[in-house]
Image (cartoon, rainbow, N blue to C red; front, side, top):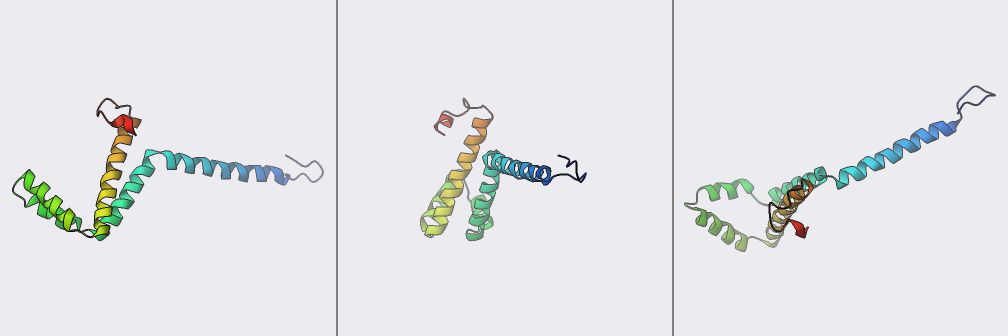
Length: 121
């Protein structure tokens, strides 16, 4: 709004622009938090924390050296049983988060008939 006496803009327009920018930043933040990108970022962060505590490269190397699929599952089961509580918690959390992100991806893409239990979430 133009002030007719001084020929300058009244600070109300400037405040409205700042308010508009603040509101739009909040809208973008809410959009990002509710989007599937946030789930992928959370999964990556959780996997990063888990890989800092668990030697993922050694686990994969030992799985590849197993003679069969049952041997790989046996190795995973026995290593899970002998791991410390933090490693067990992180393994379960990463697995659950991966399943949740996968099911949420299928739900958002309207592929609900693909798996019978996608309607649980």
